[in-house]
Image 1 (cartoon, rainbow, N blue to C red):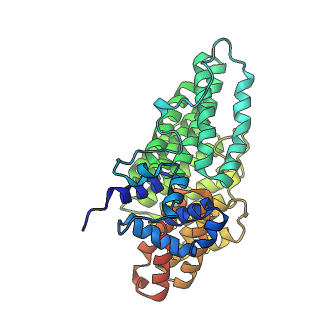
Image 2 (cartoon, one colour):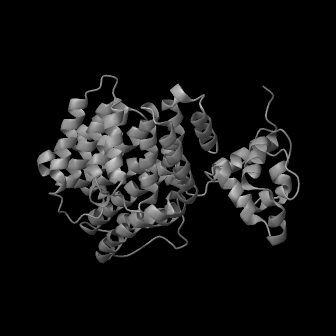
Image 3 (spheres, rainbow, N blue to C red):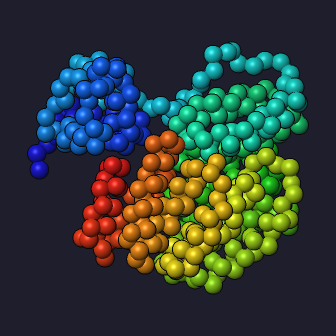
Length: 406
């Protein structure tokens, strides 16, 4: 296979650094064109085909595409199409040790205890913004606040310091989730480890357990079932001290971990999720973090349907997804997209090709607005369960839909 030219590798690298699909890039190129220039551009599908050819190194883009590429990537033409090595350009902070987005000097003097509540009161708004904005736009805002919390905690005396550490756990856990949703598992892991460290410093058993379940959540995406189970079981070590919400999170992740093991037990998974379901109506704490079981309609059904797909109980999973998605609020657009993609995966295995293609087509459009790598990965996983009908007309249509996420 011929080597891809450096300029083609640069085009592909710059697109991927922004977590854009080829369809995303086509949209950006069109939006960067002026009125007259835009009117001369071909249909969007033609632009996507050109992008595929350019990234394969078949030929270099010509004007006006060279100009549009420079506009959307913010680079000079010589840098983009020359022989210089691509430089990594993260849209968000990349390492805890180097995060310093604040233009102000370090804090000195006493730290007001009211600041603890100030940060905690903003968390619900961040969770809501995540549903609409997705990780790319929210990470810089949350990272700036997390850094400020870290600085204040270093300057504060106990018990204000412990309160700030508790808020820091919540912010670090949220950043861990945002990076995970963005597909950056390395930095998700760094923030989740920081959350666990701050939880131990806070000496709050609720926060320690919560941070452990966050480590389990990351291990799910790493497809490491044993680690998921270990973290989830560790989260239940002080079960008698834990509030219902934290116990729900630990039980749910134990169920996910067991659904991932080589030797699977559907009965065990169901028992763990049944225990979690019995606790949902008892959640009455005022902690602003870890509230997915209250925010997500049919939360336990969502977890059960997800686990059932891993267990191969496809028809039972489909029945659950049909019920869940029939009542899902439109505001949870990104999460609904993930649920639809999982439903399509189960339907692909049954199989019901027409429904799979319909769902995949609708769900693919949600990726553009959210930047969710998690949703993209769920969509890319569908063909693995569609091999039996890959050569049919619906199979080819599914391949075309999924190819935009190459």
